[in-house]
Image (cartoon, rainbow, N blue to C red; front, side):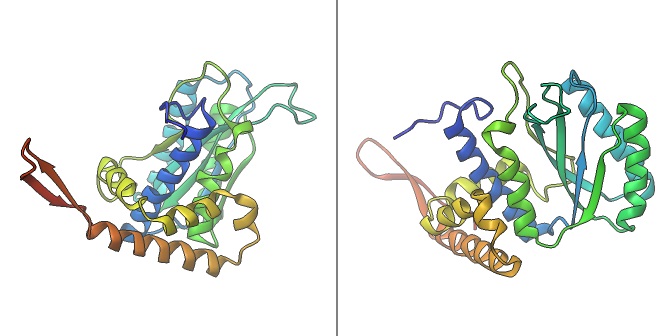
Length: 247
């Protein structure tokens, strides 16, 4: 069996395992604390945009957004273009796709705020903010479709691809990750996650079917995990400590 090397930006196997885990983390958070209802795309024009500058530009955008809509939170996935487009000049450009929570103003109004700040700071004019039809499909699109190998970071790039604002998750993300790993013992959840990672499959699936399958698999895995007991034994085989997985 393949072993995880812990480098999802370089290793296809680790990237796949990370995608599946992230999907469960985001799915758990969405079920408990609310689904993201809007998506945002931010592109760049400069082919040598530094990751640190990119992060600052994103922060400036959301500072302006919160002046108009104070409770907006985001979860973003960084990716790179392939550099094979006719007008790319062979350069791979960094950009980001984001899920937004707690948007209360009209999408076109908020898009205007984002566009003004982003164009002023980066010179890029392509900004897209819209309402999402399917929470499960949007999560799969962000975490799976945009984690394809050809859109992975170039050699030598380091950093986190999945970034969230401080208030996006309803509980510490480390706790969500621990629960996700416990729940991924469920074969049904792993099967549902694989279907979501296969973008061609989810793209042809009716929204309501994808939502129902994903939510049902999460619920079953959560129930199974809640009935698993973890024990620590001493040298004689006696139970020293026992605990149940958190449902």
